[in-house]
Image (cartoon, rainbow, N blue to C red; front, side, top):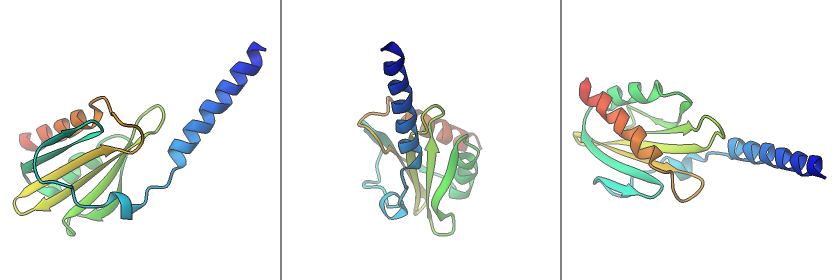
Length: 133
């Protein structure tokens, strides 16, 4: 009986991991302008506004492990990235938009209600590196 339970648990966990990793990322849904252009903390993400160069921030973000571009370009003035968690592969989406001399950085989770500060920490790390030049 214990083996049946453990097998069901393992199969369920693998199925969940496959569902999380296989869920499509529609650019029409995620590659959108940030809802506000002011520093905002949210349960599932963060918005930060800083003066800066989009190309320099793009270089920093592309160096982040498990991160790839979903849509956009520096030339377009908006880029959206997907960063996946190491264990389960949960996707977080980060949109960077050039608005005049400012960058608006909006990072948010896809699944759940709280990211336990992961997006805020990641964006803070990126912006600290940008400020260091």
